Structures are given as C-alpha cells and as structure tokens.
Length: 120
Image (cartoon, rainbow, N blue to C red):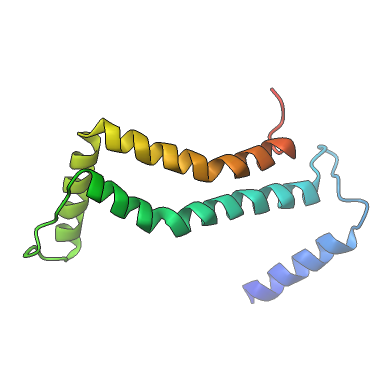
C-alpha cells in the first residue's frame, strides 16, 4: 500500500510541470537533483569502503584474534580493537581520510555548482 501511495505522490509531483516552485521558494526538481548527487556520492564511497578498510587494517598491521567468537559482543570487541589501532596511528588515519576526500570531492563540487545549499 505504501508503494502505491509513493507512486501516486510522484505522479502528482510530475504533473505539476512548471509549477514546481512552492511559496517558500523551494524548487522540488532542484531538490531531487541535489538528493540524487548526494546519494550518488554516498554510493560511490560505500562501494569502495571495504577496500579502504582493508588498506587501513594493512597499514596499522591489524590482525584480529582468529579464535574469537563472532557473536555480537565478539564482533564489537574486534571493531573496538580495530578503532583503537587506527586512532593510535595518525599517519594511516590521515591517508584514509585523504582517500575519502578524493572520492567525495567531485560530488561535493557538483553539489556546490548546482547551488544545492542556500548561501548564508
């Protein structure tokens, strides 16, 4: 039922045509374009996050205990140990942040060029 409501709402929005700017000055189609850019950027980074985490683990020489249980508590313990190693090594952390910045930069430029954020 929710899908039908969503499709109906989208059809109504498409039918407005030229009247897509509301009284508050919000351009619906521009908002959709901005959301598309943001989602595209998040997806681009998310796809590359596993490789990034592997590189980070290799950089800090992190080797989890192979005999540990992977129940929720064991998993959280491994994540905690990993984060302690990463935060203790600023060189590796800065390299990873630089990589993420390079991944996100084209999408941030696109987002900025489309003037998705109102100027303050």
